[in-house]
Image (cartoon, rainbow, N blue to C red; front, side):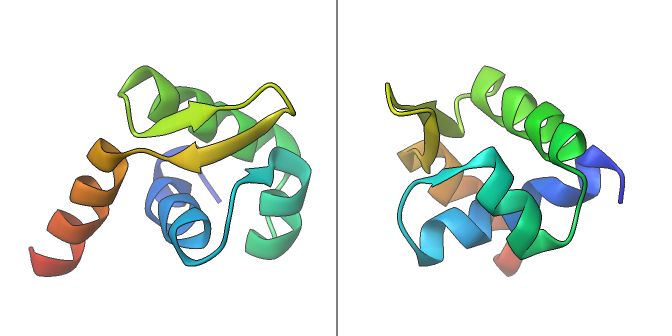
Length: 73
């Protein structure tokens, strides 16, 4: 699965649960960890994810709005 196709599933997975490590996201989404990591980096650069000191990611308000817009649109 290409990293761009993972962006919405990543946001959805993080929105449904709590912050997660890339390896856990990869397992949940059945994708390669490197591909998930690249998608998370892109989402972070766009302000949709926030990293923590524990090495996890969480959805930001901007990420929630993007997820809502993708569902509405």
